[in-house]
Image (cartoon, rainbow, N blue to C red; front, side):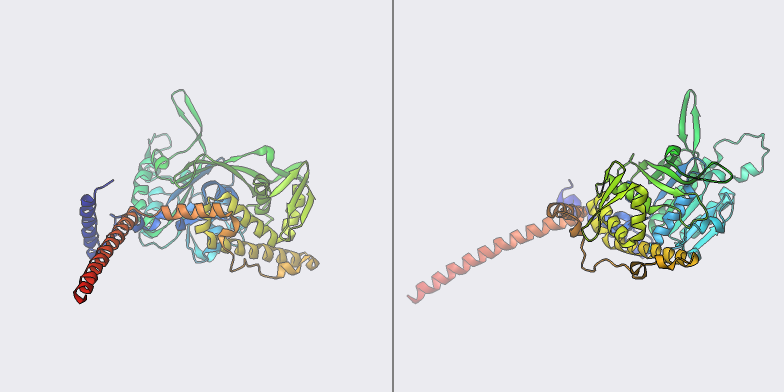
Length: 466
């Protein structure tokens, strides 16, 4: 703990340095934690994907993040679905998608129907130096909010282009990445730009040691990312349907999301999600199916054998057979789905984050509800089944304006969360609080002395009159 004298000198030094920086038009780089933009919980971004949000609490602005896994594991699909979630809370967000693989087309991107393509720009290039030079120029000016690099492994370098395939080039990509990421760090922090880097899973061999789940990119790709996700396909949990050509066609891929590194939440957690592989359906992540599984885990839905018990928004207990039955119930009642998801966020997120992000969660779920109803109405009209459209589908869902986060917690839980939020203030505020306390104490003492002096003078005056 710094003494008062040291603290005063340090504060004076910080003040002078910041004056110099302000005069020269530079960014403030020295100060207390609250002096910097990206330090608070308000800078977290939720995605609407429970497998992500209940794992690392979403993503934080101004960070590098890695998504890697085996081929056809849903990496690109998940990245685009994350972008859609960001746009639901902030429709004006601008995205840069680096397609170095050259595989992204309109058919693929149409699976995410709510993604605003007019807010996305695409960089189709395969040369690593050229790609990162372009990204650096865009980031320097703060022109975008999110960047997706798909993928590092498909890029080549200028050195590789000038060599024969027989020539051995060692650590070329690692060297470029190490320099590029360090150059970008300052700018993404300044403008709150979030970067997602997609990588392929590879086997790393070192002597007699074999690492099954490795990545390329050298040490830079280990140190710079704030979050590293590995997507693992669990084939035994896939959903299939019979096809005329192949006996069983996989239509939904069950994916385990393994959090291998996280600087913003608890690391090493494992969650899951369901990714649709059928391009005929305009859906990427099957959020209703995901909700049913997580609601069962958190005790919001009770399962006994093949039967599920669920309490609806009217307080009535409904008994449904099979997970498909629950999926159907929630599909037909999108408002109930939205209310259940809000309840799940209150149980799955840290209470402090839920309180800070409450308004953003409300907006995210309201927009998601609107999207579900829109797709349902459009599909029913195309199939000439307009009788399936209910009054609920036609009405816009809104949470009660008076609804507060305290509604979702017990009195003790809410008080503890608010206490933790207040205690997370900076050292400067704590010092200021101590000073205020000392000032109040001194003022009280002075007031007491003044009152005592006044009393003595009063007694002296009265004695004179006597």
